[in-house]
Length: 436
Image (cartoon, rainbow, N blue to C red; front, side, top):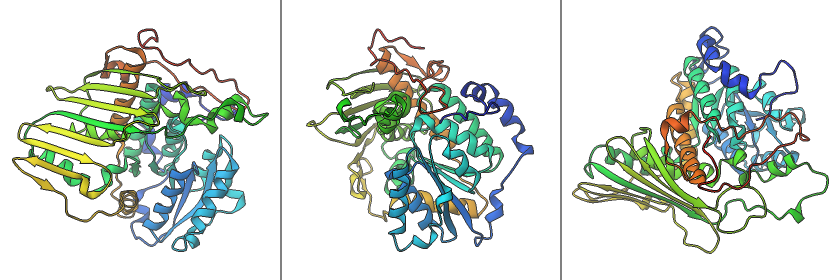
């Protein structure tokens, strides 16, 4: 997120420059140990950063997962989402008594996340992903267990910072659960397990789709309230700016990218090409409304990802996996949409609890038992795989994994106040926009 106006606060560049040194010394500064809660009866204080729909949902699932959890602090860039979230949570009779946020612990503004982290044991990070690397670093430095929504960054420098945060979290034995929610869906766990066990033979190709309407359409400039800064307008419409969302491929369709990575056993793709652009004129912002990416992994596996957010078009969220002995398909969102055809036909018939709840149930159980889950490595890989595809789509270049990992393109500006001037890059033009 933003950096404090205090002169002692490290900048974004300082974070990236000193990350390795910090990671090497964290073992001497363990401010919290997961085993402190192994008894299962001690109260855990939870803080929420980002009070939109997903953040509110995460808080509800956290409180449902553990009766000894209390929500004690919340932060958002704006006041109204905080009140909406608290009201929604208190309206749920099952968890209402666990909502213990007083007015003094409702933090409004770009720096509120720091105060939330100061006052909790477990933090839920659900603000726009451009801010995520900052929030993760502050949280792991403070020794907090973390639930972090996807994606983890919007540019490669951010990803590198998150990699250091993952390393710190491992050394401090902190739980770090990622919001790649399908990884906690029981039908899909069984589906991918069977693929990995060879039930469709050797996998040769995988095709994933994320074809939908615009997720958060950009309002016209005429609807912009008078007196608000350009930065505030961007944050209020964060999905439409690449530095804040990463583009639709990286923010929403990253779930399908994560499916491709799951098929590939989380190996990093070697290279990709992509086509994409903006078909429908935008009211503002600078994201594409469609990208199709073609990935390749070592060994010859090919992966194809189609993402589009245009109204009036075919909608689909599916996965098609082609093997030497059969095919595996995900179609739709329910448990009945996973199946295998060929030499070993199969259709899921087991339990299907809510995957969002499962991830929090397992998250808090791992804290209580002193066996913290850390999704860090795969969440970083899936995030950079999405960013890599966006880079290929925006520039028209073939982008290798090493190119993406070492990219020097900094999308996220350093911000200290709402009045800071933020320059937004123009809409990318493949063949003209350079790879940096």
